[in-house]
Image 1 (cartoon, rainbow, N blue to C red):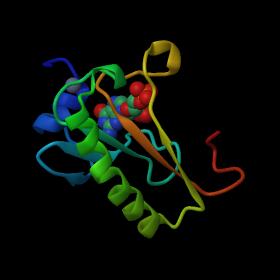
Image 2 (image 1 turned 180 degrees about the vertical axis):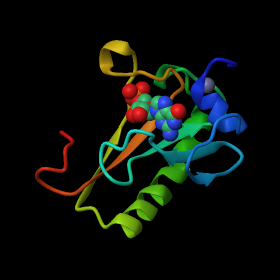
Image 3 (image 1 turned 90 degrees about the vertical axis):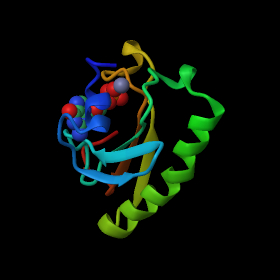
Length: 113
Ligand code: 5GP
Ligand code: ZN
């Protein structure tokens, strides 16, 4: 999708702080860090939302999600972590290329939730 910001990150057309990449999936730091280490995991193929994911893509995403969560845990030592996915504008989705947020939590007053 030529006008999709996350497709541009996948293609290297705009920069992102990538923390993981393989043939199917990319993870990078969210440009607007809700908490320190806030990371997005996306499929390389353009799928708008959860409804459009195939079993294969879902499997690739969840193959890497625990690895990335553990990397965040080791790097930032949070006390918890939220896995969040928004589907549809009314549910808070602002970028219409499927993504999962990994949001490390640091306790009361960490600014999220
Ligand atoms: P949503 O609201 O769709 O669930 O989340 C979209 C997320 O993408 C937001 O947290 C926003 O900060 C992030 N985002 C939007 N544009 C960019 C960008 O160009 N680069 C990065 N790294 N994150 C972005
Ligand atoms: Zn896209």
